Length: 125
Image (cartoon, rainbow, N blue to C red; front, side, top):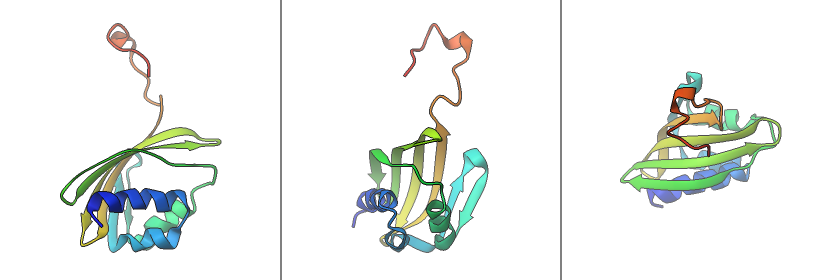
């Protein structure tokens, strides 16, 4: 599979809660960073576990996937029944058919309100 297809399949398996299948797409020594919450997840097992343990009520909509070589960027929207809507932009590294690393920027929609001084230049989404 091409790197972009691997990342698309990653999100498909995540949505399906196919944790074993998700793990098969990841390198054993995977490292994923979440800068917004200042966390690093080291290893395939911990990454799969943190996602499997996330409170239910969510779904995933892939907005876009863009790739150049082994670098793949994905943008997804993740509505949750009680936690609201989140967006994630993820920068993935894919080597030898597996995701080896990533940096994900997760944010709740509207969680960083526009300052008043910009009001005359912008429109709400």
